[in-house]
Image (cartoon, rainbow, N blue to C red; front, top):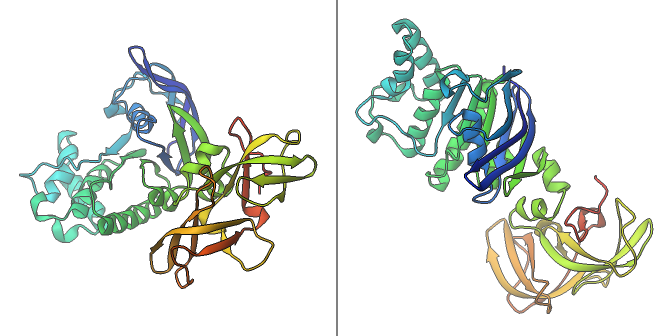
Length: 364
């Protein structure tokens, strides 16, 4: 079991600041996922936890013990990298056992732990093979198995599935989820740019931007109640529709008019602002639905339809260059390029953001 505490952790290279005062509490047994755009600092933060990067200032503690100056080998951490880093001339068994042999573990203990890890990861039939005889997904599982046998307090995963094709990513993601279920007391921290991985694996997601934490929360909370515009745009695929809007009436029920849309009454979390204030209006593509009613939110011309089978992504021209829209509609809906669609959405599914980018909606 391992609790991790990061207090005002900073990392810089010369005059270039990468991490800007990271504060984060990770409880023992949690599966935490770091997400964010390229260059946001998520891999640097992971490597700092591992001890592969030296923290410039701040504190990293594992189970209360300060780890800033503790070498990686003594932190009780095992890391799985994007590249498998397997020894090509060694069998699967020997690759998984290598670290234990270096540590001087007994032959019986090595055999027991390697075979136990192989059973968890469904690698038992492949223990005698060399890496070139394995698929990419199997090689990644060997790399994970090599970490398991060390009995670490904390697992760190640095984009472990990014080198796999789509089918293997799904299969290996399922294996990682099963692994976590079989090791409920083990803390896991996972870096990815893939939203599906983040949403399906995480107990909590940490959204990073420019070396700072934007929001931490359960996947569904970040999806339903983003704290700001950045999180709203980053979480969800396709991204949330964001259009400029204005407040037309202040009060408990504020009337908001989005660009190229009709006014709608939406309660705010704070007394928003005076009439005429400029804000941002957001609605997720999957929350828009077609309607024949005069009580609609947007009316727009269909520009492109991407038919995906169960659903279709409909790209719409609202007539306002600042207000392009995407709707995710049922796959059987009869929609074609050039059609005009009226779209509506439940008021509870709408999002409003102030000029500072922070949400103005009450939390659900």
